[in-house]
Figure 1: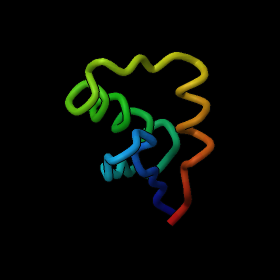
Figure 2: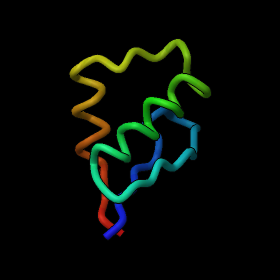
Figure 3: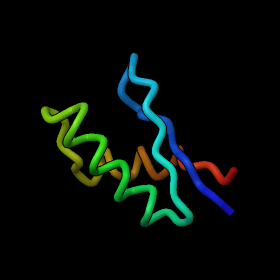
Figure 4: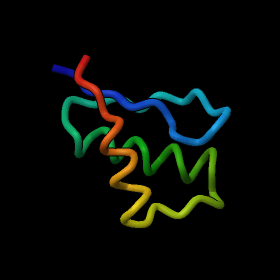
Length: 56
């Protein structure tokens, strides 16, 4: 099953997908570097993103 998460930044509709949480988080890291370079993926932010991952 595939997993996905919509970007948690207000106003951003980016969606990161993968076959596992690790793959989704790799996509999230790439998205943050590209679209939100001022965002720090600290522990709190990573946990917030992981809480929003859905199985599709």
